[in-house]
Length: 332
Image (cartoon, rainbow, N blue to C red; front, side):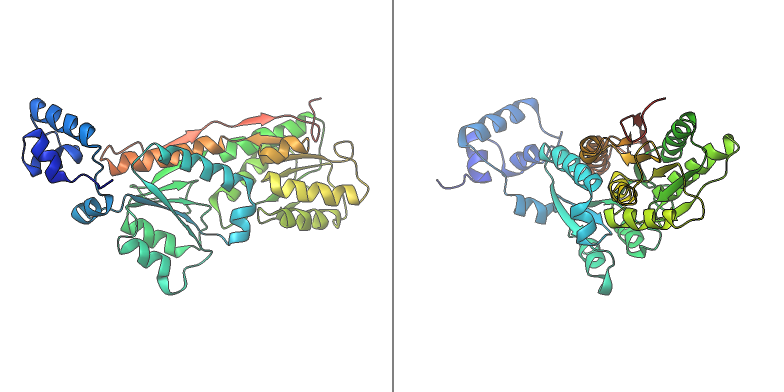
């Protein structure tokens, strides 16, 4: 069946082509009578605006870029990122926008940056960013952006959706202290990321409050293998910790595998707390800090849509966390 044209809608409605165009594009400069006539004609003719033509006319792509400065292994293997992307997709499904996925741990030749700066997308959502990702700032200079998590350098115009990672890490560490653990270590995330620094700082604040020294601060990389490698380094220390706060569930799973292979019992010999409360936390009986990952994705998409609509939302959105207690660090 041939697509109805804007001229046919105008003829049926008895108005000009420009009036139909104004209605289709959401303009308020149309009389109520003309609006009703155009809407009736659109319904009768099953008219659908040509997105490509509208994009050329408005210089909009109706696409939002999801920029993930990671390699593909990390992106497709991390349950946190999977849940956030699911939330983003859910919110965009009810909008006029599509999602362009841009994954790269670096941007050699400025290919990604040039794509964005040359009008490939109308805006960008940036997650899992590092202090060393200079191309992220070039993207943020070119189009409206919203960051999932605090960027290394916060600018006045930045939109951010985050949780209070410092407070969440403090809560997790206080739980371990309340269990009577005194030799408490942490496995951090990548310390070029603000989220990792915040979780480490919250861990240290809780220990300092209790008059304790850390039993180890081992850098990880948010991967399962990174957690396993960090656990090996913890076990190589002169004095083994009796608890460990791990900055992600994925690293916690890797660490627990190493601890059990070394003959240690969890939680009897060493209690473990992760972060995210992803599906694998429940599956492995892991105590974990729950952050609303799907909701974060929905909020990221909603804020950038509002920004593109000229609504100028509040720059910072902090979502709640909750410690979910399971068998790896059960309540006393």
